[in-house]
Image (cartoon, rainbow, N blue to C red; front, side, top):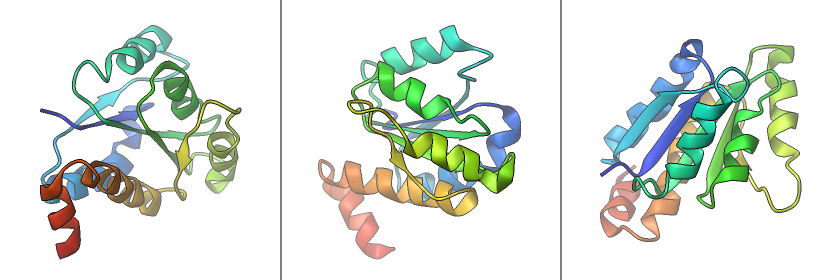
Length: 144
């Protein structure tokens, strides 16, 4: 059963998501990658967010550039932990970093670094969250 839902705003973001997926797969963590833009597909994004827990997901990773609304929109619609990865679409990703980090009280998003390093750290943070509950993931992390 999938444990991590990865959302990206467009197919062009997949080069970052691939880094994350690779690490999750290496750690034996089931994951699903979906393309859903907070701006262009708000209804789809809303449905994916609201139904994530009932579909068996335990962590959501959202990757977005520019306005980077995706992580905050998702965090507003689920109680699952949301990890935001800012992507370098404009201003070298600084705009996305600030957008993701500045969530209002009650809508937390764990914010990673910009780009591929952030995508990798999102996978590792997901694994650490899941390792609290799953001993097999904790053991795999010990081997890394």
